[in-house]
Image (cartoon, rainbow, N blue to C red; front, side, top):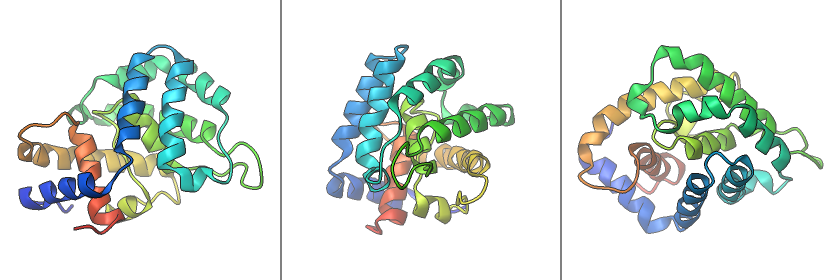
Length: 203
């Protein structure tokens, strides 16, 4: 697994802040989920705000059913809450089944609900949703990032995501030493680096 040195990692985060103008949506969605924690309708609205912006290329063909998302949050809230305040450093093999279960359930409810693209699923949306629900634990990915870490999700996406979580845990253990002060989680900073390097090629 490739782990960047301090200079490269910080450069990636700096380039993200320089180029990416949609981070305001992330901050607003994160705040919204926190404000409405324990209230599934409000939590679903927060997730939706981020997904329909950050993954608009996917949802331009149709959106998911907010009622199904709300029901999923309600039915799985205890499991979701168990990850809420955990750090990625606490990830263990005993978490695998719970992560895969949540991933698969959110994959179902975040699929396009109507139109010609009805039934299309997005592992990218699932990772974004899980991250908002547990921002210090669940990492974000997209197609290019997943491929870069040899975790492409064309088959068995839940298992691929668990593998990506393990890789991110190892990476976080190294890069946390690069961060002097930040209001962002290590997971978010890793995503900013990955996005700059693998998705956009800014570094």
